[in-house]
Length: 226
Length: 224
Image 1 (tube, rainbow over the protein chains, first blue to last red):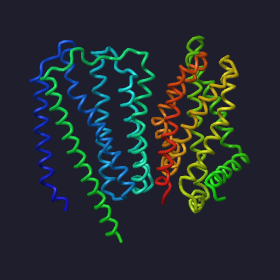
Image 2 (image 1 turned 90 degrees about the horizontal axis):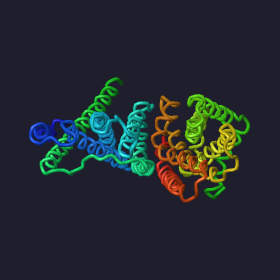
Image 3 (image 1 turned 135 degrees about the vertical axis):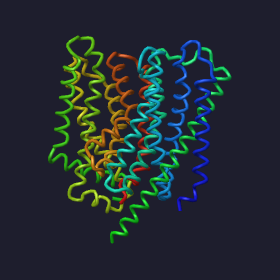
Image 4 (image 1 turned 30 degrees about the vertical axis):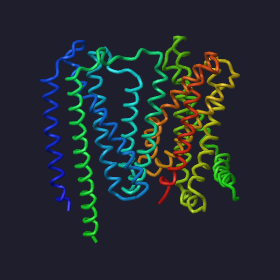
């Protein structure tokens, strides 16, 4: 039943592995060191793709939450759930790699500017998504409630971003690059974005697969018990 | 009993009557909010400048946390005696139930704000007649109520009732809190309407967006 996806799973795994190796090579060997900030700038090549993927993951959760509430097929909810889990992991990575990069470059671990604050709030909203699911009294309810959170939470993100932007306009904006990106840096960034996007797809597909297998097992167990 | 407004009013009035007879929610939240104001005053120390700068934040922390406590109680009572199931049996659109609860929540937080704000203004030696502050408070608590009513319907149906609502509500309410604190600070500093415009616009936009979204989505929360 689930074995029919062996080709898809192996292709995804192979592609992800190849892209990751290429990305690691490009980040640590190929791309030159940035002259203003030094070696620590290489975190950028992980931080930006991870942030993009986190946002993509929550967008997918948003779309599939709407689909689930509309069509009520479990498979939509499973994908939304899997995507949210991977999204929370990736957002956690954003919140870890960001300060590691910020401390040597800006001198501070954290500032309350629009991008950082929105990332933090996004992280909290989707942790709430996962918590609602685990605290629900039955799985069907958990699916419904988290679908609602997935929709309401995603709508909040642009509002938070705009509000914090307006709130912080009196503070100087932090510069990421003074000279712009050279071709080699751009190429490295593109490869890294591709690598992490494929990784996201791989993790989400595997997670969704696992969840539907778990549901099948539970169903079999409950019918067997009768 | 046919118009939507009449139905909303009936649901609202049922809650009003219950609350008026016992007064348990309003009084307890009022006391809590007042304590928050007092404790924060101690938390910020005795240096005059610090406390004044923190004043708008203190007011809104008190109203936010008092509001969260209150929303919890408003829906929690529906769980007792199968009241929520009874409400669901009424032949009304689910959105009507949401709006009935919404008006109740709004009235409740408004009552708390009406009592707490003058006390707060007195404790911080601020002028008492501030109609623009009233507008800021009303806009913000419309936003709080819109989101809080929706999320408390979710939270009471989970195992971690009391803690689930703040976890859901606070991140989503961040824009309102930021805008309300900024607008309050501007009012207390005597700024013009022009300065405040951005923050009022944010609160109005938030209110409209979330009233619409919550109305659309509420039926999925309470269905069986």
